[in-house]
Image (cartoon, rainbow, N blue to C red):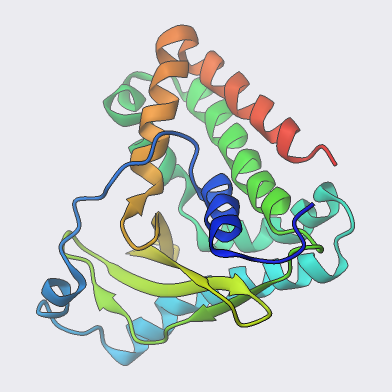
Length: 222
């Protein structure tokens, strides 16, 4: 049982929450270079930060009152739906093969990926390991488009923290997460692409959906 956050525990917990495959680096430029692209307008920055703040608020509430993983998943789900562009993340995680999938396959995959995303948060953020969340209100531009929101997650005892950055893209539904960077450079999308590729090669879209459903069941098993 995890009772407090240490550097190793924090990284392990967040890795399980955010990544599903081998560690992969992003192609992002350094923060200093990114800053030269110009700052976001205050209204854009506020709108981009809001989904992250709401997600963290939901995680904190779920940790306090969600006794089971299923209860926490139910509480977290609306914030995940609002914060993430799950279809964009899934499309990028699958890669070029996504374009050849049938509408039925895409629908099933998206449903499985949504449940998987919710369940891994519910599994990782448990009452016995309360976390402290901070969100930097100052955004920075992403060199390939959109904004980057810098945050940290750590223990409530004020110990070590782990940086978690979010790449935000502004679309028809407003600012949504399109990638998550663990330790500011390990891409969730890139890691998932490596993991999803094997399941797709072995079983096609149905195999990948089954793979995600199996992980979801594991995450929600108390």
